[in-house]
Amino acid sequence: MTFLTPYGFIGLLVVPLIILLYILKQKRENVTVSSLILWSRIVSDMQARTPWQKLQKNLLLFLQIAAALLIVLALTGFSVLHQSDTVESVIIVIDHSLSMASSDIEPTRLVATKRDAAEYADSLPGNSRITVVSIGREAHVLIYDSTSKDDVKKSIESIRQSWGYVDTAKAEELVLSLKSQDPGARIVLFSDTPFRFGDEQVQFSEYKRRTDNVAVTGFTHSRTGDRITAMTVLRNQGSDEAEITVSLYGDGEFLDSRWVTVPGSQTKTIWWDRIPDTVRTMRVSIETDDILQEDNNAYEVVHSEETVKVLLVSEGNYFLEKVFSLIDGVELFRTTPDEVSYEDYDLYIFDRFIPSKLPEDGNIVVFSPPPNEFFPVGGWMDTPEIGRSDHKIFRYIDRLSFSVGRTRIIDKPEWAEVIMECNGNPIIMEGVVGNLDILVFGFDLLETDLPLRTEFPILISNIVNEYAPSRGAVTERLTVGDAVQFRLNPNTLTAYVYLPDGKRLQAAPPFPPEPFLDTDEPGIYSLSQVKADGDINTYFDVNVPDEWLMERISYGISADTGIEHDTSIPLKKSSFSLTLPLLALAIAILLFEWWYYANRSYV
Image (cartoon, rainbow, N blue to C red):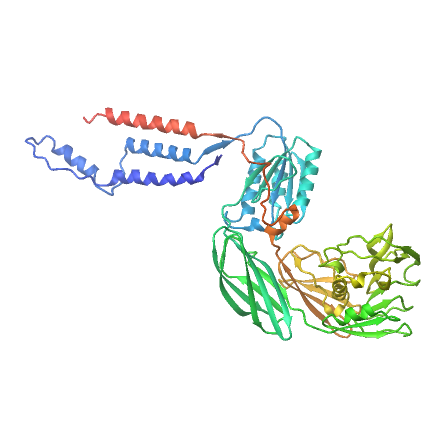
């Protein structure tokens, strides 16, 4: 059974009022009569109507209470779930993203979703084929085409709250793939957002009652000399103006607090200054409670400004010398290929040269490599076509466009991964030799127009951030669930990661380390690199994403556009409504009560 409009239970307040009318003392007028025959009846009547006494048996009272209860049940939409005889095929899709942790539906939206999804599966006809899909940062099939309702309910119960957004592209691809295998399957979505799956019709069960939530969607800092300035971006996801308290903490200690007003459905930026230059980790926190606590905090690591020692080995390259001299925190040293050995530098740049023995204490970048013993190099490929790449060295470069006169023909070694290629020939590749990260550009910078492009300084700065170990092991911004590829110091013996809860996990060996995947919790993480001459300890932060924005990006729509859901229809459970029978029975009871009252005997 189910109640379609549970607010109807408010009508139960009528029941105590009915009882109260029966136990309150009635006021009567004094009347003088000439006979004593009515005295005994009056005495018994007065005793029966004494207030606050134990209720006497009264058929009218019971009839009125029964009628009131039936009317209340009718107002609640009391229905009985039933199963049809038609076997169905159903794809149950359950959202377990960040917003499903909201508490506007107690205890949370996800808990209510799992409960209702299990009840829905239980109401389906016997031998119905049920597939359960969970959607979040990744989309997973938990059980496929099962006729066992117990197994289906266990798979639903196994879904755990995640702290990311729904990658709508992955969710749509998986659900449509399942739908193509069974075109007659019905798609049922349990979520707080009406996601679409192509043009397929979706039965949507919505779990959202309130939107009064303010989230921290951005937190960053900048350093100028000995001054640290931080910026926080807040997003009000509700339509009403919100007044909240926001606090800033440094290394766990309170630093500052603000009382701010965030307009409805808008963002607000807060600037923090007077932050001590000794601070290494920061946390900003919304202290005012709302329906979703998990997006009320954001974390930021303040990286120390250690000087990066870069050695440029070249016969002469003005462009490289100039660009490295413009990067803050970089100390450039120059030498020619005549040196026998190279050591004591964080990053080595070999221009048109590779030594027979590689350095052991710093990573390596090579431009236009000659034939060498580390990877096969042949002749030249003329005017290769430069394609697009999403590699980290091209971060913040939206449109990469430059011309190359020629590039080396290289046979990719087993240890390398191609970053950019043309007709199967690597133009840019990277890999690990021993403990050293090596980045190889097949072309000569002097035979390209890349140094003349505005993107060139950004490219070189990204290379320094990625390949200079003393710059820190993690520089990119991470959200929960992101994989982290550590670039360890070449002399690292063992590496450990300390999670926000203090738990320690080993990251290396092996070398190079596998991508670190245990980033399911927002907070400050610590990487400890154990070396023979001393440990290196660095921090990195992991935050919850801006779910509202990321879901629109994954849909490929603008931030001010709503998510389309014209293919969604409300989910209707298979049930028989008892509203009319209950009202009919209540009317019948009231008619009988009126008849009984009108015809009762007083003798």
